Image 1 (cartoon, one colour):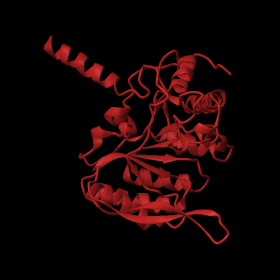
Image 2: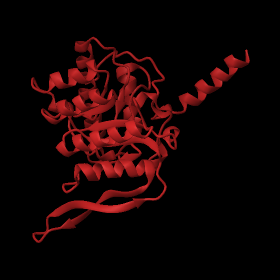
Image 3: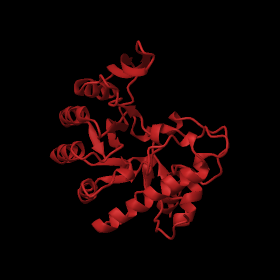
Image 4: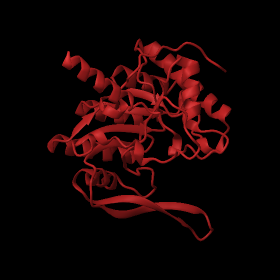
Length: 291
């Protein structure tokens, strides 16, 4: 009996990890770091995630690297990039056991679009993901979404968490769509970032030391540009969700260097759904399309 009670208590705690939570969000509820994967911190456990693909040539090479090291990743894809040429790449992701997740039909800044456009953009992508999994014969239950640019909560007309829940209720009759931020940003998109810089930044979040972020500047013509900027990680999280982008060639080598480091240093790479904050807590079935 005590074991059943304990299991029930743990189940209740796990329910609290569902993001967005089963409640209405206020306009002042914003922020980022409250959604860190703290269960992974100080455990040398990381989940790899890649945004903005699929890329016709880079993504297959990345899949080869992941297969070589026998690790799984989560790909937050832009579904307008699906084509007869890229669709087989996503099918391969699914067939090889990776999570394919929603990054929108179009890479919108969600704070700059209306609620109806936000929900429409998300729904189109979600329905395409269902079709891809159905074609692969795989039950689509890991229903993750990532806000492009991590942009949410700054549109005065509505709160994106409430809109996310509303769409989920319409599609599934439950709060099924989970959003996922990150703990470790490789900043691999910065133009002058090298594969070695990417690896160094990832390693620094495990061991501490030199890492790279970015700074903005304007050139002689006044154009806004970005370049890498070194900093020191003094208190490494030693675990969490890693953000990268499979549309950049340099990310491939940076990832391979990190996976080799992980293999030789007792660092664990797990699937996103294995982290406590991102466990799948509901069995959800698509019921309808609103639009």
